Image (tube, rainbow, N blue to C red; front, side, top):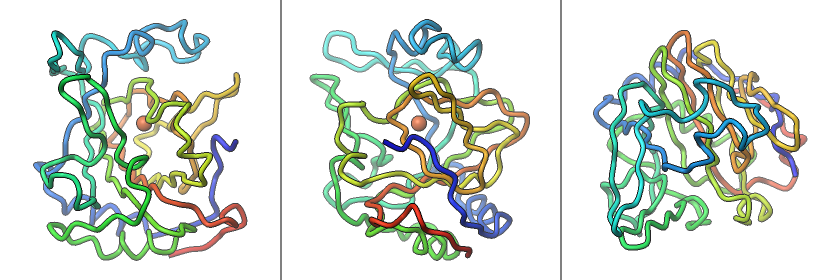
Length: 239
Ligand SMILES: [Fe+2]
């Protein structure tokens, strides 16, 4: 199983950034993390993630209480996301990352549920981003998500999917555009090895624990999920 792989693909970062910055911040949602005890505990991930990379009391988080979700809004900056594509089966108001069942507290990850091409939203104009995404080695693309972390913000350790979810085994995967790093790489931990997402374009299996330390400046990324072409490992290109 591949955890991380740099991809030899270049693109115009300035242009990409301009398009992302043309999307009103009011369309972005601040990430709220599930209150999982292991997200707080330094022991849970072999003491790899230290200090502020862990969840803390100042991070926006939610937990279940009497079959009701309780949101706690924290003061520290964490990633803000905008899903540029969607599936018609789900309400338009959704942020398109997960579906939350109020009763059980169960979370369904929409990209693992809807394994088919997703539709670009019309409300924003992202011609270059669409063109670049089209060139990636996917059979089809699902979620394309813009991720902006303000200066000083960070992403606490978490896992996007359960390790039991067959998503990656089925040939799906994520390609990440590291447009502005904020001087901090994505760090991924798997099998006692730490990977640093410092390439301009990289594949990542985010079912493994990952985090971003507090950034020195604004961090701008795009994450694209989809069904990979069989020969994606030999892919290279530029846009
Ligand atoms: Fe993540």
